[in-house]
Image (cartoon, rainbow, N blue to C red; front, side, top):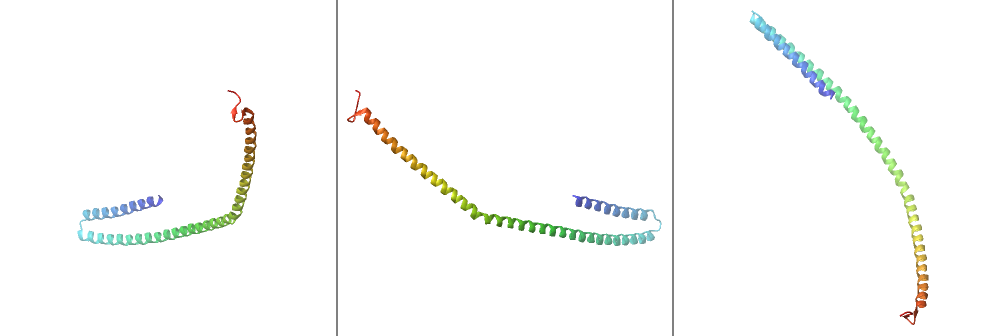
Length: 152
């Protein structure tokens, strides 16, 4: 944003300078009685103006080079920081990768324990079902006589 303001200010001052020179030249040329003398002075002023314009361009070029160097330094610094951050991320990822086998082994052990508990629970449930079938057969026999109901 500052760069835009700087450009705007430079354009304003350059326009003011050029306008002032042109206005002064025209005023002098029109008010002077000696036209040849006025033309000679106008030529000198124009030459001075273009010399100043050349100097202005050179100054502008030098400022541009300084800005370019500053930008290069900032970009280089930013790149160095990015490389450093990337290195830290890689080290962190390597440390986490080293922990993966241990975490995987713990997960396998947890699954094995859960499977053993599930098998034991299923076996216990199966025993309970077998016992309940025996009891239910005895109850059926109590209420049935030779496969027929005791009542009508």
